[in-house]
Amino acid sequence: MTAEPLTSEITTTDPVPMLQDMIRFASVNPPGGEGPCVRYVEDILRSAGVECVLTGVDPERPNLVARLRGRGAAPPLLMHAHVDVVPVEGQDWSHPPFDGELRDGHVWGRGAIDMKGGLAMMLSAILRFRTEGIEPPGDVVLAVSPDEEAGSAVGAAHLVAERAELFAGVRHAIGEDGGAVFTCGDRRTYPIVVAEKRACWQRVTLRGPGGHASRQGRSGTAMGRLATLLTAVHDRRMPAHITPAVDLLLAELAANSDEPLAGRFRALREDPAATVPFDLLSEPDAVFLDSILRNTVNATIVRTSDKINVLPSTITVDLDGRILPGDWTVADYQDELRGLIGDHEFEVLVEGERMPAPQLGSFYELLTDVLREADPAGLPLPMLMTASTDARLFASLGIACYGWLPLRVPPGARYQDTMHAADERVPVDALRFGADCVHRMVERYR
Ligand SMILES: [Zn+2]
Image (cartoon, rainbow, N blue to C red):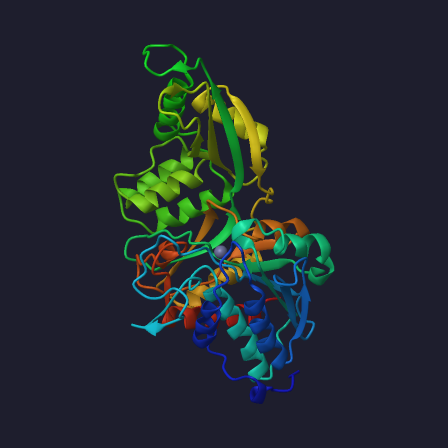
Protein backbone atom coordinates (compact mmCIF):
# COMPACT_ATOMS: atom_id res chain seq x y z
CA MET A 1 0.00 0.00 0.00
CA THR A 2 1.44 3.38 -0.87
CA ALA A 3 0.53 6.90 0.11
CA GLU A 4 0.34 9.81 -2.30
CA PRO A 5 3.90 11.18 -2.81
CA LEU A 6 4.13 14.78 -1.72
CA THR A 7 7.45 15.77 -3.25
CA SER A 8 6.17 19.16 -4.43
CA GLU A 9 5.59 20.26 -0.83
CA ILE A 10 8.90 18.89 0.50
CA THR A 11 11.92 21.00 -0.32
CA THR A 12 14.50 18.60 1.13
CA THR A 13 14.87 15.36 3.01
CA ASP A 14 18.52 16.15 3.82
CA PRO A 15 19.05 16.57 7.58
CA VAL A 16 21.90 19.05 7.05
CA PRO A 17 19.98 22.20 6.00
CA MET A 18 17.25 21.43 8.54
CA LEU A 19 19.85 21.28 11.30
CA GLN A 20 21.41 24.54 10.12
CA ASP A 21 18.01 26.23 10.23
CA MET A 22 17.21 24.89 13.70
CA ILE A 23 20.55 25.99 15.17
CA ARG A 24 19.68 29.56 14.05
CA PHE A 25 16.74 29.55 16.51
CA ALA A 26 18.73 30.35 19.65
CA SER A 27 16.41 28.39 21.92
CA VAL A 28 18.62 28.75 24.99
CA ASN A 29 17.10 27.43 28.20
CA PRO A 30 16.72 29.31 30.47
CA PRO A 31 14.57 31.08 29.42
CA GLY A 32 13.74 28.73 26.52
CA GLY A 33 11.71 30.53 23.87
CA GLU A 34 11.51 27.31 21.87
CA GLY A 35 8.24 28.32 20.13
CA PRO A 36 9.71 29.50 16.80
CA CYS A 37 11.84 26.37 16.45
CA VAL A 38 8.89 24.09 17.30
CA ARG A 39 6.73 25.91 14.72
CA TYR A 40 9.48 25.57 12.11
CA VAL A 41 9.31 21.79 12.60
CA GLU A 42 5.51 21.89 12.54
CA ASP A 43 5.53 23.79 9.21
CA ILE A 44 7.84 21.22 7.60
CA LEU A 45 5.68 18.33 8.76
CA ARG A 46 2.31 19.93 7.96
CA SER A 47 3.39 20.77 4.42
CA ALA A 48 4.41 17.12 4.05
CA GLY A 49 0.92 16.04 5.08
CA VAL A 50 1.84 14.84 8.57
CA GLU A 51 -0.77 15.38 11.33
CA CYS A 52 0.39 17.81 14.02
CA VAL A 53 -0.87 18.72 17.50
CA LEU A 54 0.57 21.59 19.53
CA THR A 55 0.09 21.32 23.27
CA GLY A 56 1.56 22.96 26.31
CA VAL A 57 1.16 25.12 29.36
CA ASP A 58 3.04 28.13 27.95
CA PRO A 59 2.06 29.38 24.44
CA GLU A 60 5.65 30.53 23.91
CA ARG A 61 6.92 27.06 24.70
CA PRO A 62 4.67 24.48 22.99
CA ASN A 63 5.22 20.77 22.53
CA LEU A 64 4.58 19.32 19.09
CA VAL A 65 3.27 15.80 18.65
CA ALA A 66 3.22 14.75 15.00
CA ARG A 67 1.89 11.49 13.61
CA LEU A 68 2.89 9.93 10.30
CA ARG A 69 0.22 7.35 9.58
CA GLY A 70 1.40 3.79 8.98
CA ARG A 71 -0.25 0.86 7.28
CA GLY A 72 -1.23 -0.91 10.51
CA ALA A 73 1.40 -3.66 10.35
CA ALA A 74 3.22 -2.55 13.50
CA PRO A 75 2.44 -0.69 16.74
CA PRO A 76 3.06 3.05 16.79
CA LEU A 77 6.71 3.92 17.35
CA LEU A 78 7.78 7.02 19.29
CA MET A 79 10.69 9.31 18.49
CA HIS A 80 11.23 12.06 21.06
CA ALA A 81 13.46 15.11 20.80
CA HIS A 82 14.00 18.38 22.62
CA VAL A 83 14.71 21.70 20.94
CA ASP A 84 16.01 23.71 23.88
CA VAL A 85 19.77 24.10 24.22
CA VAL A 86 22.14 25.10 27.01
CA PRO A 87 23.77 28.58 27.15
CA VAL A 88 27.11 29.47 25.57
CA GLU A 89 28.23 32.21 27.98
CA GLY A 90 31.81 31.96 29.18
CA GLN A 91 32.74 29.54 26.41
CA ASP A 92 35.42 30.11 23.81
CA TRP A 93 33.80 29.33 20.44
CA SER A 94 35.90 29.42 17.25
CA HIS A 95 32.68 29.65 15.13
CA PRO A 96 29.52 31.62 16.01
CA PRO A 97 27.28 29.29 18.05
CA PHE A 98 23.95 30.29 16.44
CA ASP A 99 24.84 30.73 12.74
CA GLY A 100 24.47 27.08 11.75
CA GLU A 101 27.64 27.34 9.67
CA LEU A 102 28.53 24.53 7.27
CA ARG A 103 32.31 24.39 7.18
CA ASP A 104 35.04 21.73 6.99
CA GLY A 105 32.41 19.03 6.53
CA HIS A 106 30.68 19.91 9.78
CA VAL A 107 27.59 21.78 10.91
CA TRP A 108 28.73 24.05 13.73
CA GLY A 109 26.64 25.41 16.54
CA ARG A 110 24.82 24.93 19.82
CA GLY A 111 22.52 21.95 19.51
CA ALA A 112 24.41 20.21 16.68
CA ILE A 113 24.81 17.17 18.96
CA ASP A 114 22.39 17.93 21.83
CA MET A 115 20.05 17.41 20.09
CA LYS A 116 18.84 19.32 17.07
CA GLY A 117 21.11 17.05 15.00
CA GLY A 118 19.14 14.05 16.24
CA LEU A 119 15.85 15.78 15.52
CA ALA A 120 17.06 16.54 11.97
CA MET A 121 17.72 12.81 11.49
CA MET A 122 14.20 11.95 12.68
CA LEU A 123 12.65 14.58 10.38
CA SER A 124 14.68 13.34 7.44
CA ALA A 125 13.49 9.76 8.04
CA ILE A 126 9.83 10.84 8.24
CA LEU A 127 10.03 13.03 5.14
CA ARG A 128 11.59 10.22 3.13
CA PHE A 129 8.52 8.08 3.66
CA ARG A 130 6.44 10.93 2.26
CA THR A 131 8.64 11.65 -0.80
CA GLU A 132 8.88 7.94 -1.62
CA GLY A 133 5.13 7.59 -1.18
CA ILE A 134 5.55 4.64 1.17
CA GLU A 135 3.62 4.17 4.40
CA PRO A 136 5.73 2.96 7.32
CA PRO A 137 4.65 -0.33 8.95
CA GLY A 138 3.13 1.47 11.95
CA ASP A 139 2.38 5.07 12.85
CA VAL A 140 5.48 7.12 13.63
CA VAL A 141 4.85 9.53 16.49
CA LEU A 142 7.34 12.39 16.78
CA ALA A 143 7.32 14.37 20.06
CA VAL A 144 9.26 17.64 19.94
CA SER A 145 9.53 19.27 23.35
CA PRO A 146 10.91 22.34 25.10
CA ASP A 147 12.59 22.43 28.50
CA GLU A 148 14.59 19.18 28.62
CA GLU A 149 17.65 21.05 29.87
CA ALA A 150 15.82 22.55 32.86
CA GLY A 151 13.59 19.85 34.28
CA SER A 152 11.06 19.26 31.44
CA ALA A 153 8.09 20.68 33.42
CA VAL A 154 6.58 22.47 30.41
CA GLY A 155 7.94 19.85 28.00
CA ALA A 156 7.80 16.06 28.19
CA ALA A 157 6.44 16.11 31.75
CA HIS A 158 3.38 17.96 30.43
CA LEU A 159 2.97 15.45 27.60
CA VAL A 160 2.97 12.39 29.85
CA ALA A 161 0.83 13.99 32.56
CA GLU A 162 -1.81 15.67 30.35
CA ARG A 163 -1.66 14.14 26.87
CA ALA A 164 -0.87 10.47 27.44
CA GLU A 165 -3.59 9.55 24.92
CA LEU A 166 -1.30 10.78 22.12
CA PHE A 167 1.04 7.88 22.95
CA ALA A 168 -1.54 5.11 23.31
CA GLY A 169 -0.26 1.77 22.08
CA VAL A 170 3.37 2.88 21.86
CA ARG A 171 5.75 0.16 23.09
CA HIS A 172 9.15 1.46 22.03
CA ALA A 173 10.84 4.83 21.65
CA ILE A 174 14.12 6.27 20.49
CA GLY A 175 15.62 9.48 21.78
CA GLU A 176 18.96 11.14 22.36
CA ASP A 177 22.00 8.99 22.95
CA GLY A 178 23.27 11.52 25.43
CA GLY A 179 26.94 11.21 24.71
CA ALA A 180 27.55 7.91 26.40
CA VAL A 181 30.57 7.14 24.25
CA PHE A 182 33.17 4.51 24.90
CA THR A 183 36.16 3.72 22.72
CA CYS A 184 37.17 0.13 22.05
CA GLY A 185 40.58 -0.20 20.45
CA ASP A 186 40.42 1.07 16.88
CA ARG A 187 36.80 -0.01 16.43
CA ARG A 188 34.08 2.52 15.69
CA THR A 189 31.51 2.17 18.48
CA TYR A 190 27.82 2.98 18.55
CA PRO A 191 26.18 3.51 21.92
CA ILE A 192 22.66 2.16 22.41
CA VAL A 193 21.43 3.62 25.67
CA VAL A 194 19.24 1.00 27.35
CA ALA A 195 19.10 2.50 30.85
CA GLU A 196 19.70 5.77 32.65
CA LYS A 197 20.76 6.65 36.16
CA ARG A 198 18.47 8.97 38.07
CA ALA A 199 19.26 12.04 40.10
CA CYS A 200 19.36 12.16 43.88
CA TRP A 201 20.38 15.72 44.69
CA GLN A 202 20.82 16.38 48.37
CA ARG A 203 21.94 19.07 50.78
CA VAL A 204 24.03 18.23 53.81
CA THR A 205 24.23 20.69 56.71
CA LEU A 206 27.44 20.69 58.73
CA ARG A 207 27.48 22.36 62.15
CA GLY A 208 30.15 23.14 64.69
CA PRO A 209 31.36 25.81 67.11
CA GLY A 210 31.71 29.23 65.49
CA GLY A 211 33.53 32.28 66.75
CA HIS A 212 36.26 34.81 66.05
CA ALA A 213 38.55 33.53 63.36
CA SER A 214 41.63 34.98 65.06
CA ARG A 215 41.76 31.97 67.45
CA GLN A 216 42.99 28.61 66.20
CA GLY A 217 42.53 25.00 67.30
CA ARG A 218 38.83 24.49 68.10
CA SER A 219 37.75 20.89 67.61
CA GLY A 220 34.71 19.72 65.65
CA THR A 221 34.32 22.88 63.56
CA ALA A 222 32.03 22.95 60.53
CA MET A 223 35.08 23.70 58.36
CA GLY A 224 36.84 20.65 59.77
CA ARG A 225 33.81 18.50 58.98
CA LEU A 226 33.71 19.98 55.48
CA ALA A 227 37.31 18.97 54.87
CA THR A 228 36.56 15.38 55.98
CA LEU A 229 33.45 15.20 53.80
CA LEU A 230 35.09 16.59 50.66
CA THR A 231 38.10 14.31 51.07
CA ALA A 232 35.85 11.25 51.41
CA VAL A 233 33.77 12.21 48.37
CA HIS A 234 36.88 12.79 46.28
CA ASP A 235 38.96 9.80 47.36
CA ARG A 236 36.45 7.04 48.00
CA ARG A 237 33.75 5.20 46.06
CA MET A 238 30.48 3.57 46.93
CA PRO A 239 30.42 -0.20 46.28
CA ALA A 240 30.17 -1.44 42.69
CA HIS A 241 27.10 -3.35 41.48
CA ILE A 242 26.69 -5.04 38.11
CA THR A 243 23.37 -4.07 36.51
CA PRO A 244 22.06 -5.87 33.38
CA ALA A 245 23.11 -3.09 30.98
CA VAL A 246 26.65 -2.93 32.39
CA ASP A 247 26.95 -6.72 32.40
CA LEU A 248 26.17 -6.81 28.68
CA LEU A 249 28.49 -3.87 28.00
CA LEU A 250 31.38 -5.60 29.81
CA ALA A 251 30.69 -8.82 27.88
CA GLU A 252 30.85 -6.96 24.55
CA LEU A 253 33.97 -5.06 25.58
CA ALA A 254 35.70 -8.26 26.73
CA ALA A 255 34.82 -10.03 23.48
CA ASN A 256 36.14 -7.17 21.38
CA SER A 257 39.31 -6.20 23.27
CA ASP A 258 42.82 -7.62 23.37
CA GLU A 259 44.51 -8.96 26.49
CA PRO A 260 45.20 -7.83 29.15
CA LEU A 261 42.25 -5.43 28.90
CA ALA A 262 39.79 -8.18 27.94
CA GLY A 263 40.67 -10.06 31.12
CA ARG A 264 40.11 -6.96 33.22
CA PHE A 265 36.62 -6.53 31.75
CA ARG A 266 35.88 -10.21 32.49
CA ALA A 267 37.15 -9.78 36.04
CA LEU A 268 34.78 -6.85 36.60
CA ARG A 269 31.85 -8.93 35.38
CA GLU A 270 32.68 -11.67 37.84
CA ASP A 271 33.54 -9.42 40.76
CA PRO A 272 32.39 -5.80 40.54
CA ALA A 273 34.83 -4.96 43.33
CA ALA A 274 37.70 -5.67 40.92
CA THR A 275 39.78 -2.62 39.99
CA VAL A 276 38.51 -0.46 37.13
CA PRO A 277 41.29 -0.53 34.49
CA PHE A 278 42.31 3.11 34.82
CA ASP A 279 45.82 1.94 33.85
CA LEU A 280 44.71 0.55 30.47
CA LEU A 281 41.90 2.89 29.40
CA SER A 282 41.85 6.55 28.47
CA GLU A 283 40.82 8.67 31.45
CA PRO A 284 37.38 9.60 29.98
CA ASP A 285 36.60 5.92 29.34
CA ALA A 286 37.80 4.85 32.79
CA VAL A 287 35.83 7.62 34.52
CA PHE A 288 32.73 6.66 32.55
CA LEU A 289 33.07 2.97 33.39
CA ASP A 290 33.76 3.72 37.06
CA SER A 291 30.61 5.87 37.17
CA ILE A 292 28.21 3.31 35.66
CA LEU A 293 29.37 0.55 38.02
CA ARG A 294 28.04 2.26 41.13
CA ASN A 295 25.92 4.93 42.74
CA THR A 296 27.91 8.16 42.67
CA VAL A 297 28.22 11.47 44.49
CA ASN A 298 29.98 14.74 43.77
CA ALA A 299 30.04 17.85 45.96
CA THR A 300 29.19 20.80 43.73
CA ILE A 301 28.03 23.79 45.83
CA VAL A 302 29.30 24.92 49.24
CA ARG A 303 27.57 27.78 51.07
CA THR A 304 28.61 29.52 54.26
CA SER A 305 29.31 32.95 55.74
CA ASP A 306 31.01 35.55 53.56
CA LYS A 307 32.97 37.13 56.43
CA ILE A 308 36.66 36.40 56.47
CA ASN A 309 37.05 36.92 60.23
CA VAL A 310 34.15 34.67 61.27
CA LEU A 311 34.53 30.95 61.82
CA PRO A 312 31.17 29.70 60.47
CA SER A 313 28.99 27.51 62.65
CA THR A 314 26.94 26.24 59.67
CA ILE A 315 27.98 25.11 56.20
CA THR A 316 25.77 23.50 53.59
CA VAL A 317 27.11 21.25 50.86
CA ASP A 318 25.01 20.32 47.84
CA LEU A 319 25.69 16.83 46.55
CA ASP A 320 24.93 15.69 43.00
CA GLY A 321 24.10 12.04 43.54
CA ARG A 322 23.14 9.54 40.81
CA ILE A 323 21.37 6.26 41.51
CA LEU A 324 21.72 3.08 39.46
CA PRO A 325 18.67 1.88 37.51
CA GLY A 326 16.56 -0.89 38.99
CA ASP A 327 15.01 -1.20 42.43
CA TRP A 328 17.28 1.23 44.27
CA THR A 329 15.47 3.62 46.60
CA VAL A 330 16.71 6.91 48.01
CA ALA A 331 16.98 5.23 51.42
CA ASP A 332 19.22 2.52 49.90
CA TYR A 333 21.32 5.22 48.31
CA GLN A 334 21.63 7.16 51.57
CA ASP A 335 22.75 3.98 53.36
CA GLU A 336 25.62 3.65 50.92
CA LEU A 337 26.39 7.34 51.15
CA ARG A 338 26.64 7.10 54.96
CA GLY A 339 29.20 4.36 54.46
CA LEU A 340 31.24 6.89 52.50
CA ILE A 341 30.84 10.17 54.38
CA GLY A 342 29.28 9.17 57.72
CA ASP A 343 25.92 10.18 59.11
CA HIS A 344 24.67 13.69 58.35
CA GLU A 345 21.53 15.78 58.17
CA PHE A 346 20.43 14.98 54.60
CA GLU A 347 17.78 16.99 52.78
CA VAL A 348 16.65 15.57 49.41
CA LEU A 349 16.41 18.43 46.89
CA VAL A 350 15.56 16.46 43.75
CA GLU A 351 14.69 12.81 43.26
CA GLY A 352 14.62 11.69 39.62
CA GLU A 353 11.96 9.36 38.28
CA ARG A 354 12.80 5.70 38.55
CA MET A 355 13.21 3.89 35.23
CA PRO A 356 12.36 0.22 34.88
CA ALA A 357 15.08 -2.34 34.23
CA PRO A 358 16.20 -2.25 30.58
CA GLN A 359 14.72 -4.54 27.97
CA LEU A 360 17.30 -6.17 25.74
CA GLY A 361 14.84 -8.09 23.54
CA SER A 362 13.77 -7.90 19.91
CA PHE A 363 13.77 -4.10 19.62
CA TYR A 364 17.32 -3.94 20.94
CA GLU A 365 18.23 -6.62 18.36
CA LEU A 366 16.68 -4.49 15.61
CA LEU A 367 18.76 -1.48 16.67
CA THR A 368 21.97 -3.54 16.62
CA ASP A 369 21.07 -5.25 13.32
CA VAL A 370 20.51 -1.93 11.57
CA LEU A 371 23.88 -0.69 12.83
CA ARG A 372 25.75 -3.86 11.84
CA GLU A 373 24.30 -3.71 8.32
CA ALA A 374 24.98 0.00 7.89
CA ASP A 375 28.54 -0.24 9.24
CA PRO A 376 29.80 -3.84 9.36
CA ALA A 377 33.08 -2.72 10.96
CA GLY A 378 31.31 -0.88 13.77
CA LEU A 379 30.57 -2.19 17.24
CA PRO A 380 27.17 -1.47 18.81
CA LEU A 381 27.53 -1.19 22.59
CA PRO A 382 24.73 -1.23 25.16
CA MET A 383 25.06 1.74 27.47
CA LEU A 384 23.91 2.91 30.83
CA MET A 385 23.82 6.70 30.88
CA THR A 386 25.17 8.52 33.91
CA ALA A 387 22.53 11.26 33.55
CA SER A 388 18.88 11.24 32.59
CA THR A 389 16.89 12.52 29.61
CA ASP A 390 13.19 12.85 28.75
CA ALA A 391 13.25 9.06 28.34
CA ARG A 392 12.65 8.84 32.10
CA LEU A 393 9.26 10.54 31.58
CA PHE A 394 8.12 8.54 28.55
CA ALA A 395 9.15 5.38 30.41
CA SER A 396 6.45 6.20 32.98
CA LEU A 397 3.88 5.45 30.24
CA GLY A 398 5.22 1.91 30.00
CA ILE A 399 7.27 2.70 26.89
CA ALA A 400 10.68 1.01 26.59
CA CYS A 401 13.03 3.88 25.72
CA TYR A 402 16.38 3.67 23.96
CA GLY A 403 18.99 6.32 23.25
CA TRP A 404 19.77 5.63 19.62
CA LEU A 405 20.81 8.36 17.19
CA PRO A 406 23.77 6.78 15.41
CA LEU A 407 26.65 8.93 14.19
CA ARG A 408 29.34 7.36 12.03
CA VAL A 409 32.49 9.18 13.12
CA PRO A 410 36.16 8.14 13.05
CA PRO A 411 37.07 5.58 15.75
CA GLY A 412 37.82 7.33 19.03
CA ALA A 413 36.30 10.66 17.91
CA ARG A 414 34.39 12.17 20.81
CA TYR A 415 31.97 14.61 19.23
CA GLN A 416 29.62 14.05 22.15
CA ASP A 417 32.17 15.76 24.38
CA THR A 418 31.30 19.05 22.64
CA MET A 419 27.74 18.96 23.98
CA HIS A 420 27.21 21.69 26.58
CA ALA A 421 30.73 22.88 25.62
CA ALA A 422 32.37 25.20 23.05
CA ASP A 423 32.54 24.31 19.35
CA GLU A 424 29.66 21.84 19.40
CA ARG A 425 29.55 20.40 15.87
CA VAL A 426 28.59 17.34 13.91
CA PRO A 427 30.06 15.91 10.68
CA VAL A 428 27.53 16.08 7.84
CA ASP A 429 28.34 12.50 6.76
CA ALA A 430 27.61 11.25 10.27
CA LEU A 431 24.29 13.07 10.28
CA ARG A 432 23.21 11.61 6.94
CA PHE A 433 24.31 8.14 8.07
CA GLY A 434 22.16 8.53 11.19
CA ALA A 435 19.12 9.66 9.21
CA ASP A 436 19.52 6.60 7.01
CA CYS A 437 19.70 4.29 10.03
CA VAL A 438 16.57 5.82 11.57
CA HIS A 439 14.71 5.41 8.27
CA ARG A 440 15.78 1.74 7.95
CA MET A 441 14.85 1.01 11.54
CA VAL A 442 11.33 2.44 11.11
CA GLU A 443 10.89 0.42 7.88
CA ARG A 444 11.70 -2.81 9.72
CA TYR A 445 9.91 -2.17 12.99
CA ARG A 446 7.10 -4.64 13.72
ZN1 LIG B 1 19.83 16.61 25.22
